[in-house]
Image (cartoon, rainbow, N blue to C red):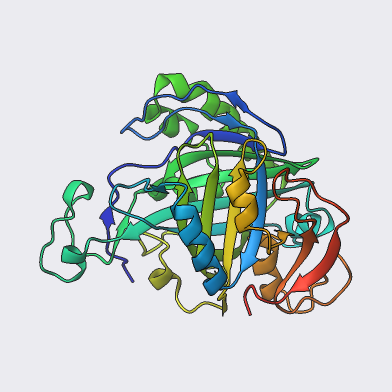
Amino acid sequence: MKQDGSRAARPRSAIEVSAEASAEGRVDGAESPESDRCLDGVRLIRRQEQKYEMGAGAAAFLKEEISRRLPLYEFEPGQPTTYITTVYFDTLSRDFYQLAERSYDDNIKIRLKEYYYDAPWRVRSGVSSDAGSAGRCTAKYLVSPYCYLELKQRVAGFVVKKRFGIPKEILSLLLNGQNILPTLLRITPLGAARDLEAVYAELSRYLSEYTVGITSVVNYRRTVYQESEESLRITFDDRLSVYAPPAQLYEGFEALTSDALGIPIRKSDTVIIEIKCPGEYPQWLGEALRHHSKRRFSKFTSGVRLLLPGAKSKNGEIASGGIVGQDVSPDHRSGAGGEAKTKRSDGLFN
């Protein structure tokens, strides 16, 4: 079944390298101007990243407080929220899943990400087929011809993300072992070519060493508050849903929207808040979070756990649903942890 959709006006940063940790400051401040060909510059960012899980009511209260302090960020002008589909890859023996279960701070994920948006009201209602700068169609969503392959590594507490954009129409070639680097280089600005080659080589090495397939799919809606990528950034993820692995990607679908993915295996009523900050939290944020504890959890392991009945969590319990996480000492200003207490949170993907 063909998923009709208009194409978003511009792709996201398609070559991107970032490193996040409990350390202060921007490591590399250079960022290339945006390119309408496909790719732009490389970023390397060091900052602490903390996660919180709460109900919709508590999240709405927190969002109201944050909105008074930080501006709403719209990557696509006029779109206050972004839909994200993340496809996770793993081996048949679930090597990456098992590593992530054993060690939260030392693991790797291979994933594909896609971003899309609600179509303007006049397009959805059929009043107009003009989607403005995004093109013309009568679609429910604004979608892009690009998706993004990403390596996300945790190494001794550091989070390192490396990714590049790829036209959906040639994704299957890469996953089937063909070399598509020459094609990517033709649509990449010269200044980003060397970085593309490095990220592509590393991803290719993993794909040659491990035979991977689609393990799970997670779809959610994200709202972002920030002044810049380098400063305090707070994201709210809601409408989280887990889907079984599709047989093929982009075979008969222009985009992996929630409609195209079908009926989810499980939905979540909770909201995931991620806070990325270069240094200590501002006082107002620490006050807003004083009744909430930081959590350690993963959409990847939570989703796979639902698809592997009887899979064991890292503390040996049978994880037939929910999420295994850690409560961390709520020293919000410094981001410092104390004695961690592990417990299951059954709020996510109930």
